[in-house]
Length: 68
Image (cartoon, rainbow, N blue to C red; front, side, top):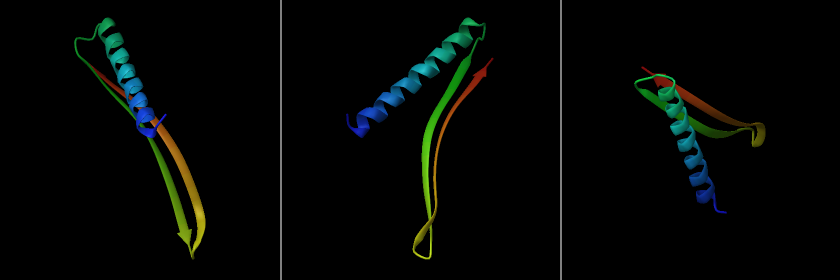
């Protein structure tokens, strides 16, 4: 599987999750619902005097929901 296929699959999963969250909010009585789903990764390398000093890797996931 290529990297693009994997990214497309994750994007589709996040879209389905957002759809499910909005549907549950509407079922729960909201007249309007909006979801924001985000996922990201970060890699940072700091070099000092020609040598690696610090390597940091982080990942995050977030879901926001606005209902009225």
